[in-house]
Length: 408
Ligand code: PMP
Image (tube, rainbow, N blue to C red; front, side, top):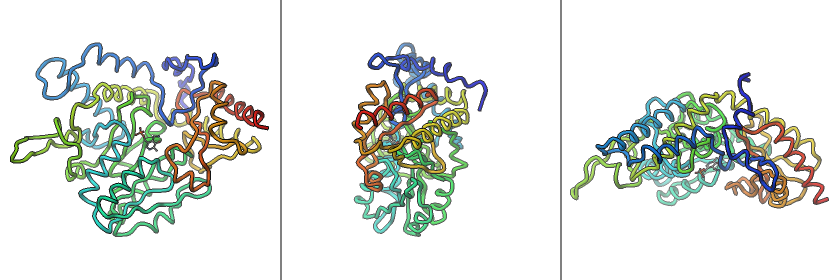
């Protein structure tokens, strides 16, 4: 690990981490839901409204041009961060959900037809299931589901068996938001391409935790949420291969996305603007650029190594506590750890942890099919970010012991 990484220094950059909860230090382990924001992001966001705010594009006045430049610069930062070939392959959206819906409507409605098949997996977040279900209903296509092993790993053999010349889209999470399982997306993309399907990667839980290279992964689309990678709410992006973005239908229609409008017919702007109808949240997008600059300044490999040590400490500690069941023990495991304590309901465990100042998420984590797969109603999930510490992991483990005691 990079010797210069000092988690105490990092924590000073996140003002909210100094907050107390029930007079206790806040231990924030709900990063899979959303991350806290560093000063580098808060200041840039604040600066947009204090100093430069004016609606972007089409403006002739100074502030509009400044804001437009910052917005397009942020697009270049996202492209660089994902190693996209060109910034025109980056569409700003509000979040992962919007990015996946964009593909389902703009690509799916045009290229998926009756009898075609779309493949997802049992470990998907609802936002990588329901848009495809609706697409299947609209277009008379069929949704097929790749299975997850007892260990929480994707069954690659069974996935291969689902693919055929009928497959149009394979859409898989890079990292499970429940179990932290890391899927071999490069291999999955290759499998999808070998049957002529496009590959969509839900990178909501990987972009915050590891370096992403869309060209090396080879995916056709990749979706992520800015708010999970230290950026403001309302910022997100879709990476799409330029030739596919060119070929797709427009999605939302209105201002910004047009070339020429008349009652005889309308022509559309080139991607990415073709997919950015209406005034975007440019302040959030600009601050997303600041967030990615911030993590790149630390180094995604450094962040990945730091978080890996926290995940390992958590897994080792939980597995040593009698009565704790860890849901998802994939070999390649990042960022999130899900577990159950004896037969205690996850909500009860979460409420006790909360009283100790420990913020974890409980419930089905928008992954009900995965809960059904394991025959459980939900889990307790601890999910990590670059500012979490080994001491916080130990506090969680002590908290779990406390939960056990309370119910014994
Ligand atoms: N996919 C995964 C894997 C997620 O973890 C999440 C958020 N929990 C989403 C999609 C949806 O993200 P958002 O709500 O930001 O659109």
